[in-house]
Length: 151
Length: 305
Image (cartoon, rainbow over all chains, first blue to last red; front, side, top):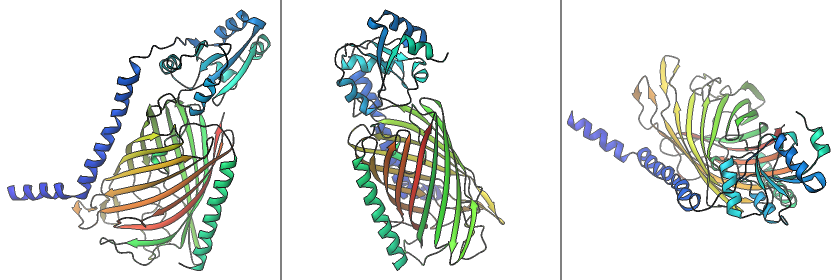
């Protein structure tokens, strides 16, 4: 009985399946360290920007308060590698940043980290109304545009 | 290698070369590579901005060879070529969660004869637990993946024909659970995907067959060709425990399989992607108890608003 158990344990220990499983579990486990690295090295020290939700009502307020009753929106996402280059090329604080297809904390953290002077919002249905289906994307919004937006 | 195969591989080479030239010349938008860590494991992966996406692909497999428990290659078995038409549709329920349904139709050809059948349908889901970030290139994309393959098709074990012309799928339902890690924000990309394979036992004739649990590890390396165009290559290692017939372990039945693949993605227009993939299974490293094959696939992926 004890001999059988010993042989079974020995075969498990020697099996290639067990070795591969050990290596892959170790590799899988190590990937979980990257998020921890991210939390430890980035999340804590960078002041996040304030990027409140942008819905149609808020957009209307911004357009009405703007010079020339026109606002240029720049839609971006943190997971889009081209968006980084696009945001870096922005000239001045005139354009309004709208993080979309993304979560508000991630947008706020990213904008805070980039130290951009632009106003920032998190999309709350505006992108869809303006037919933004990919990022980065720019849209100029006027009062006329607003009146054409679907409710 | 027969002259036909030589022609086929010349066509392969020309296709790959043409694809690379065209892809390099076309700029597009650049995103991280959605789940490229799993390579060709799942045909369809959705971006956070995509709600509905389809995959229409055709593929052909040939050069079948059996590999015995000692790793010796035998005569070609089965059909001379196996063509497949695959349709997949993906629907996102949230920015970080989507599911896909894959329906393959296969056609086996053998010296003038051919048979067609629906392959094994598969339902899959992915949850993006950790998204990449362009301000942190070292931060990987991590997705949890699961899929369930229905055993609609006939099994290799079920068939009575020696040429296996009427074998279309594995014949065994299987659950897959895994994690897919990918670094795709830079010009050079790479990833690792690990998946546990949990088949169900199935009655085949008078025998209850359990193929054995398995493990699939995929490692990929890729290179951006400008915009969303890219080339991804990788190695897949799959292992399975010994098969069990009526609960009895079958000696020397454990499976070891290695595949290599190259995938070229070219985005000719927004929301459209053309994909060319070459896969060689069982030709590199050590292989046992499997069927080696070479395949080429071409697919069109489209995002719908």
